[in-house]
Image (cartoon, rainbow, N blue to C red):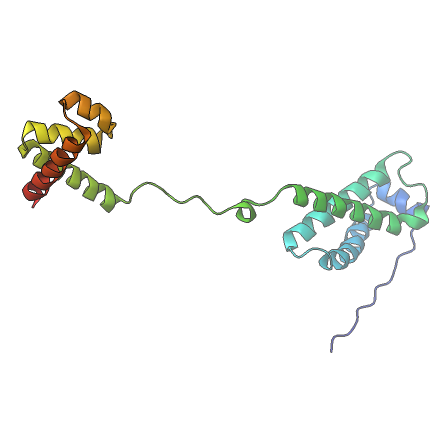
Length: 187
């Protein structure tokens, strides 16, 4: 069973703030150690990431220090502890707003898939392309022309019919023969 830690709360006064303004080393060290403990306890309940806790803690001390040094910054020295706590609350709210507006990329989407072929796939594609070119070169010119127009250039079949001077039905027959001839040469 854990034992509770008790903390002595410091009574702040004008003398304490005057010593902070005068950059008294002992008072500065007390200021940092005293509020670091309080802020750390407060922030551990609200933030999970140790880096965020440290960032908010440092920003709080920096802003409180600036208020102490500013002309008319702290009007009620006895409420200095509450002032530092409210500065911390404001920084926390700013932090929440910033994180709510900026979403990490991991939450938005996964990395896009790499659409480029793998090196072995590229090699296989190059070899296949060379083999198809060799087979096409062995076919009669008419079969080669039909296969290139329909499959490689993906031209409209009516346009190919006009170019060859054949009907759509006869183009189907010519295409069938050319494919059969291609497969025979390929094997």
